[in-house]
Image 1 (cartoon, rainbow, N blue to C red):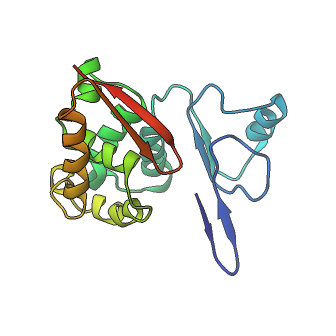
Image 2: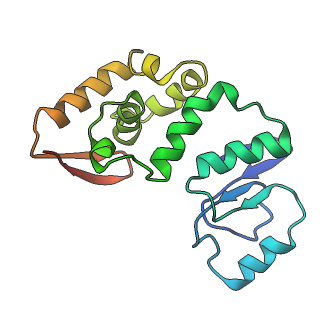
Length: 176
């Protein structure tokens, strides 16, 4: 993601880069640094805007904890999002079935986000997600229409569902 203004450009990326254009960076993956020089550059950075902790299972939880501890950001209103973001991003499901059953509102919403048929749907959902519970989000139009269309296409064909997400390729789910 990046944010540009007339006076300053801010960018973030998924793999570490020593580029001065990268002003914020968060990662928890063991593969965060592509070269030893990148790792060294990170260790020498004094901006206070680059964070790496491989002990985290998800970037969601890392961002929430850093935002709270270093910048005083109140994550309490986003607790449900952080909780489920940590489960989904960290693949920390209680059972394999819970990862695909789509019973939880968070899982239904994740399906919508991954397979949104309209390119502008997700940017429209983000402000709503900061103000509503996940259960409310799956009831909000247009989310509920997409959720249920996708949900029923998955659960209505219990053997195989294939779908294509925008710029994400094809996803196949085998459900029993």
